[in-house]
Length: 73
Image 1 (tube, rainbow, N blue to C red):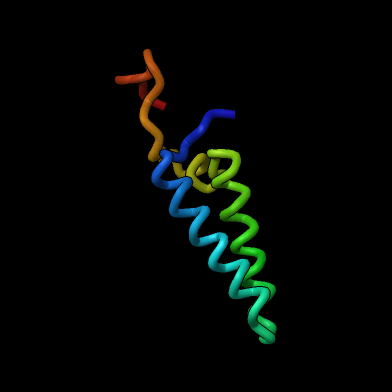
Image 2 (cartoon, rainbow, N blue to C red):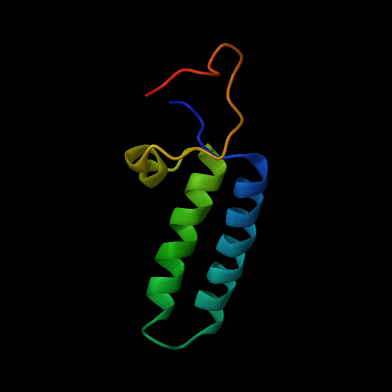
């Protein structure tokens, strides 16, 4: 699986994921499960370096690998 997330994108996702998980732990609202689910998804995509939604939309914030410049999808 190719990476489609840049390091800054992964860092932002990690920070937001940790914040959402912390909020989910602190909240006593039914919305805690939504925050937890989004936090886990963002954390998983940050850890793997691949976002399936970016893949479907053919978006990539990662820098192109050697030999990939000029290549069209």
